[in-house]
Structure formats: C-alpha cells, structure tokens
Length: 233
Image 1 (cartoon, rainbow, N blue to C red):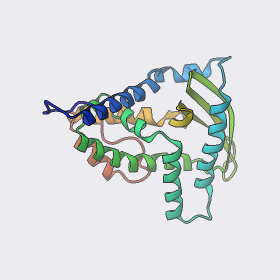
Image 2 (cartoon, rainbow, N blue to C red):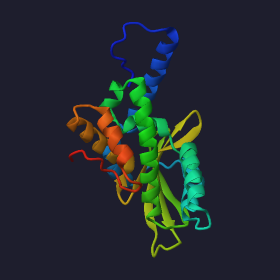
Image 3 (cartoon, rainbow, N blue to C red):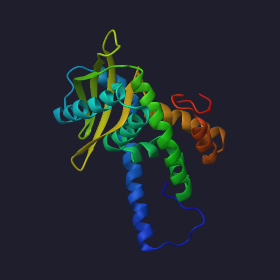
Image 4 (cartoon, rainbow, N blue to C red):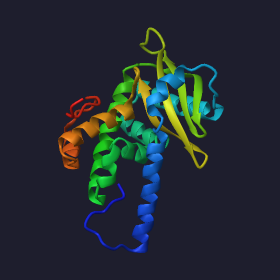
C-alpha cells in the first residue's frame, strides 16, 4: 500500500504519510498473523482471559445486537445508527488493508480511496446481514482467549428474540493506545474478514491485480450477498 509507482522524489510530509501507512499496514497483518491457528487456540483448555476485552465486547457488541433487533426503529435510522456503531467499534482502516492481502501494497492513493469507499459499504451490508440472521436480543460473554498482549478472541452467546436456542458469535479485538477495537467477527463458524481476504485476493489474482475489477464487483454486490465477489476458490 505504500508503494507509489512513477515517483522519483517526494516531500517530507509525503514521506511521513508513507511511514504512517507502512505502520498501519504492518499492524493489520500482525493482527492476523496467527489466524490459521484460531480454531485450535480457542479449543485449547486453560488459556488466559482478558476481562477488559470481555467488558468491551459485552457492552459494545450488545449495542450492535440491540440496534439490529430494534423493530421500533425505521430502516433508514437503523442503517444510520449501525454505520455509526461500526465506525466506533471496529477498526475499519485496518480491516480494509487486511482484506486486500499482498495487493494492498500496490494501490495508488486514488485506488486506495476508491476501494475503501466501496469496501466500507459492502462490508457494512455483510456484517449487518450475518448478525441479523440471529434475530437475537441479548448477548452474553462466555469467555475469552488471549492470543498475545492486546489481541483477544472473546466468545459470546446471542439469545432471545426469535431464537429457539443461543447461538455462538466470536469477536476478535485488538487494543491500541488503551482502546479496544473489533478486527474480525466469527459468525456460524466463519471469520468474516479472513474469508473476505481469501475471496478478494482470488478475484485480484484472476484479474491480474486490477483493483478496478474488484471495486466494480463490490459496488454491484447487493446488500447481504455474502462474501463471494466472483473470484475462484
């Protein structure tokens, strides 16, 4: 994401901006570096818990679930509130970098801006659709697993509403400068950001790295379509 093709010189401000992006890019991938081992780690007994991460998920994820379950709220208002909650609770810039995989390094500033806008709308619809599937009203934290300092998977049960039995949702959260943010959500056994990265990288591989192909597909995707954007799996 930090490369800028066709440029031979830059001003100090631009250099600082690049360094900031390098740090964000590195941080995005550091969060997910151990992603393939999530299931095994969650199943392991005796893992350490993080009560701060659990408290964050209990309060903030409950706000998300309650908003989606509020039938008194008009649809337009619910969408507005949900969008604001996503910005507040999730680390959207970091997730945006992560889902592009190695292709994040190749974007120009204009491509980066265009993809971020398209992905923001697409991801909001996907997350809302997946969480709304539960039709639940109450969220209860059942435990957590510290992956490493500041990187925690918090397990929850969603119940109530039209649900006949509780369903499990896991939230991966990371702490930066004393603030927890959600970086991925596991719904029905699927980690959404990890799956999106697999699909997006596949699409870009097939398109020879043309980000405009992926952007166009995201813009065409109907709300609630899911993860797949046309790439081969």
